[in-house]
Amino acid sequence: DVKVTQSSRYLVKRTGEKVFLECVQDMDHENMFWYRQDPGLGLRLIYFSYDVKMKEKGDIPEGYSVSREKKERFSLILESASTNQTSMYLCASSPRGGRRTDTQYFGPGTRLTVL
Amino acid sequence: KQEVTQIPAALSVPEGENLVLNCSFTDSAIYNLQWFRQDPGKGLTSLLLIQSSQREQTSGRLNASLDKSSGRSTLYIAASQPGDSATYLCAVLSSASKIIFGSGTRLSIRP
Image 1 (cartoon, rainbow over the protein chains, first blue to last red):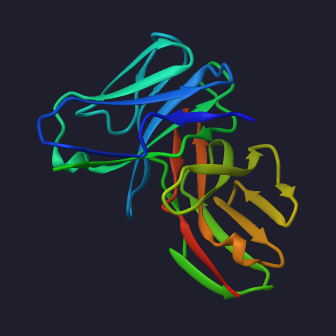
Image 2 (cartoon, rainbow over the protein chains, first blue to last red):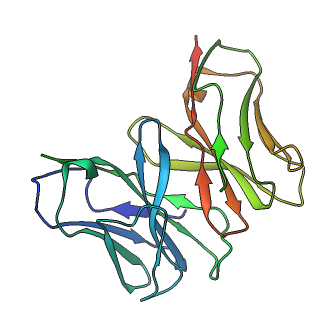
């Protein structure tokens, strides 16, 4: 079974803190994604990566950055957390390289609260 | 710009009923459409994926159809069970290589 893990299920941070959300997949997938999920807005893509050291902006990249130094790990960074970044963050991976993607496999999510 | 809509936002039916969840999208130029299930506080689990050249996919009691020309997909659940209670999301991979999700339908099956 594909396994996508996220470093924390629940996280509470203060405004202005630097926050790292980690995601690891164990199936050698090329593609990895970070989404945030908010009530009424659905899932929105923040950043994605097709391969190591490659990254592309999604629909809402402002206030976020990412790092992919190893194929299995994709990190989401909030340089200076703000209250409007309180959300559920979901990581996903999929098995194909290139621009087309097949089934995505999701992690359990990290519920981040910024006070 | 591709938009994905799921109506209704919530649905409650008695156990044993067959039901249909709806998904509509505005741009018919898609590569595939996928249905996911999400349990409260958890990640998404892929249920069915339909390639743009396909009309339907089946898995157990689930059947998903795709009509690209009308911009619609349906997820049919036969003989519903309380364990089917969850939020169901559809997502389209558009020609711009972006995946766009609907807001989901929260399904509750009453015993």
